Image 1 (cartoon, rainbow, N blue to C red):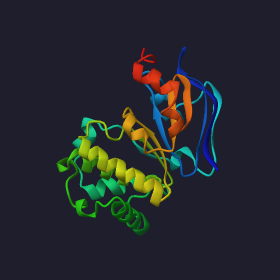
Image 2: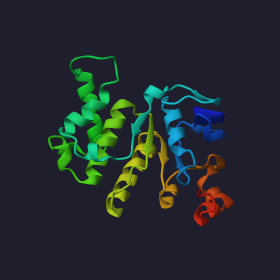
Image 3: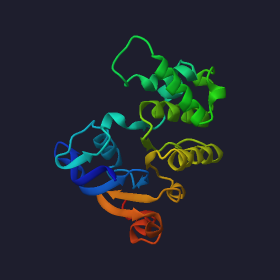
Length: 234
């Protein structure tokens, strides 16, 4: 069953078109990698999927899920890396949007935060300062925070950017585990073509859709050869 359907989606800013006539769907349980060069519309698409920007034409339809029920892991920023809070406080803050505003966290929210820490194998980090963690540990903690917000559908924006190869592999393994063991649907924007092999579907963007389909077909496609050859770069 499709969770998200984009039909002839066009988005942009003023007269500038960033996404044009884009159609694809995300099925429950999918692991979809979104690739493409800078300027191909990936960031604009993310804003659209999260409900932060509206289409100029076409549509984004949600089935059994809403934009508020997408767990979002953005690219790391210096502000995130230096956040003055404990790991527990960071993870628990992912529950803020559930059940309306309250001046305190409920027992159910605390249980959920503890479960998500267990799910990513980071219980031992609970009392640590977030700013004292390694890059890979921070991303795992932020992944747990995103799961607190929504554990059915995750949108990850280059989650391994600035991580070393070992930490990147560990994070990819964790995302695989969430998708396969816990049936979390994953949409991941990535510049790392090696990571695409872990997915089951690929969307390559070049403002419009350059490719959408299975991973095996993608690695035999002309779209990939054009991307690797730099033909889509502006």
